[in-house]
Image (cartoon, rainbow, N blue to C red; front, side, top):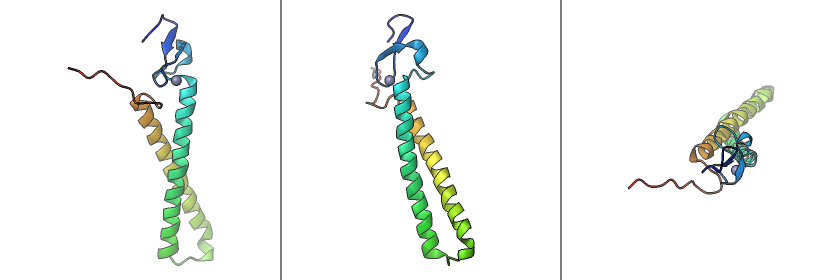
Length: 111
Ligand SMILES: [Zn+2]
């Protein structure tokens, strides 16, 4: 919904903003920041859970040797980095493609 050429509704929160403040998905800076924060939170959670899973697997199935300690720690760090980035990207893309974070957009049903 447009009210003149210079102001446009944010697709996520539906507040009016100058069109120059919105990004190419028509999201305001506050909603962009919120979706990045939510993606980061999910990234941390998924990264920690995946690292915990790998650590448990290593603890239960491998014979821990102190000379490989750096390898084990590097493996946990890489697991955390990769899975948290993947989860962040998935959550970010999910909310962006859904069109909003506050409540799902309600497109008109074709009749
Ligand atoms: Zn917004």
